[in-house]
Image (tube, rainbow, N blue to C red; front, side, top):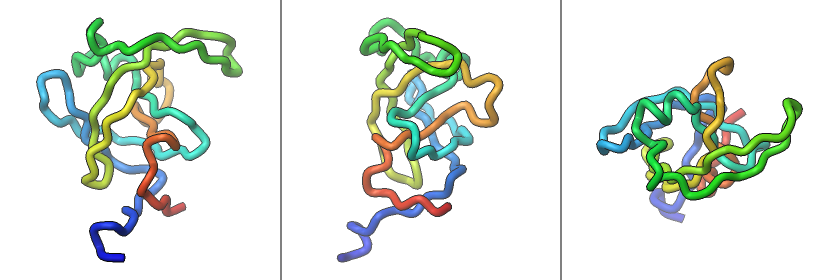
Length: 116
C-alpha cells in the first residue's frame, strides 16, 4: 500500500477547517466521536458561518436523547479533517455548553484511524 492509500491518523480532539458560505475556511476545535453516527455543529457557529440558509438545509430529522425528543436541521457541510476534504450532512444542535462546537461522527471517519 503506498502512502496515498494509507489511512490518516487523527486524535480524539482535532482541529477542522469548516468552509463557510463565503468559501472562507474557519478553524474550529472538534471532538472525534465514533459513538456518534452523524457529525454535529453548534447552531450559533452554523449561523455565524452562514450555513443555516434555507437552500443549505437538506431536511429536519427527529432525534431522541436523554433530554427528550427534538427536531434538528440537517445541513450540507464541507470541511477538512487532517487535510482531507469531507462533504457531509451534519445535524445542527445547541453545543454551547460543550467544550467543542463541532463533533465528527462515525459516518465521516472512513479512511481514518483514531488514536485514543
